[in-house]
Length: 148
Image 1 (cartoon, rainbow, N blue to C red):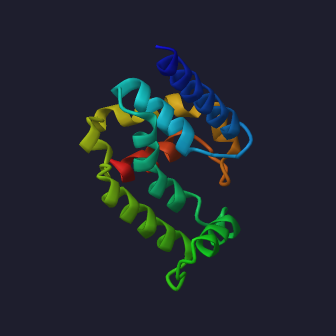
Image 2: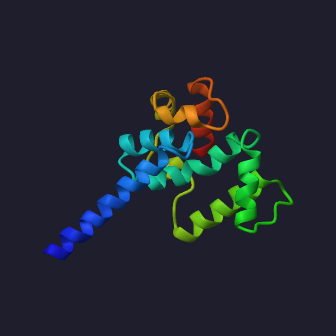
């Protein structure tokens, strides 16, 4: 029906705007890791991103301290344990409330695939916008290992 077509069109347009928005946010390594995981293991990109995000926050903790503090302030969180720790705890709480798995193995990602996922992710241009410079695929593999 025309309502279904209009709703699908609105959804597609919203998806395009979200994708376009990430081009300007400096989203960093959560995006390429999510791309690689979701494409190879046929899981929703948002779920893959949600699982790796706490580990990406830890990876970027020193380089993104000011931005992490802005998030802590915006969400009125008590940062007595440091902004990265507080944000990771808040993210984990949200994942629990939504019933999102916390580990890559819980969505079928194999440990053996982590080196390939890291190598593929290094080729994604979003890596260049990560707050902390990513020197090689080994660093991405460490993030994946912590999420596995």
